[in-house]
Image 1: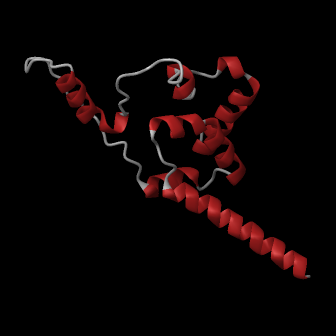
Image 2: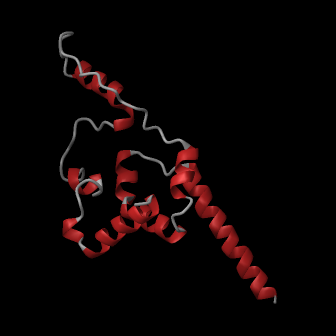
Length: 137
């Protein structure tokens, strides 16, 4: 399955099975319900080791309590990787998937990667340019 096919599947599931979206790609906002539960701390996978240190320090855990180290890769977005993933996803699907995860971006402090913004802007410029050319004819 390609990434583009996966995006279309998630969109299909979100639009046709609203109560049954697979929890692996269900928006975290829906799972965690941050508007109904007052969390003391929200951590991110990308900064898990530092977040865990902060939590342990804030709860005054002793030095013998440590977050288990693992082989955490850096999930910091790489614009080349995003470009490769999204180059075959239609602009319409990108807009729809961003809308599906809108609350996650807002509430949890994530930013839409620049490469996605550029992809959307490039398509808008192309549409405007094409429309202007057609209008002149």
